[in-house]
Image (cartoon, rainbow, N blue to C red; front, side, top):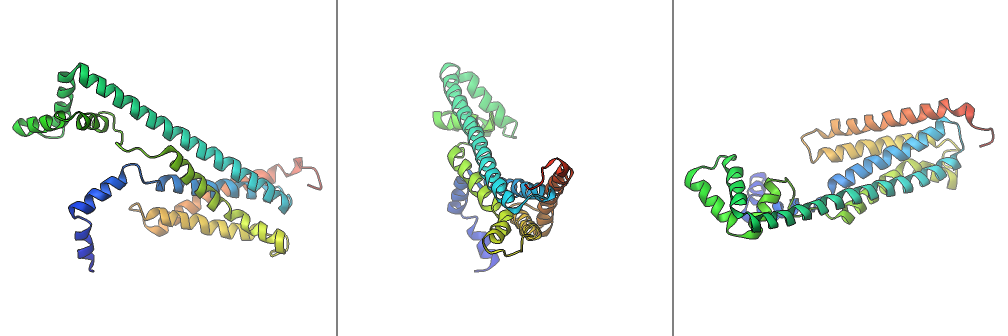
Length: 253
């Protein structure tokens, strides 16, 4: 099938309807990307700070895993609470709009008229649009929810958003620790796992940025470099902090 045929297939009425349905609340890509970036940044920040402080590899694993689980859960819980609050807010607005339509139908009908007047509808066409929307209460409330409050009709699941964030956080957050696990188990890097951890994490940062660019207008290479730069900046800061605090650490740790 040619590119032109693919393009035509994407614009059939059924394909467009399915795509619009999928766009309302079912896309957890943003949660996954944010979780992945945060997982790599925070875990590698711990690795860098411990390496900068000159502490043992075993401490890297202990602190890295503890931080990854605690921070990943914290981020997922925050996402859950925020998404749930937004969903509850949407339900509140829907209930209020239903009550307003029951008690002040003419005022609410005029709101619909003003909304579509601002979109360029006029005269008989405008009145037909208003009549069509206000003839069905659900359609009327749905329109008010979207146009007046700017809320989606099918909001994302708070639990799915949290799970997407947590899963991506753990998956990518483990990468900075892989070299230390291998070194602890097989002495792969003869006790010097930090350079390998840097390489693995840099590759993860770049891959996340390149993947993210698939859903934006940004070129994959510049997207990869952007995320790599953010992660590198965080890692350098953490390493310097660990290095500066090294005199405060007792010997033998």
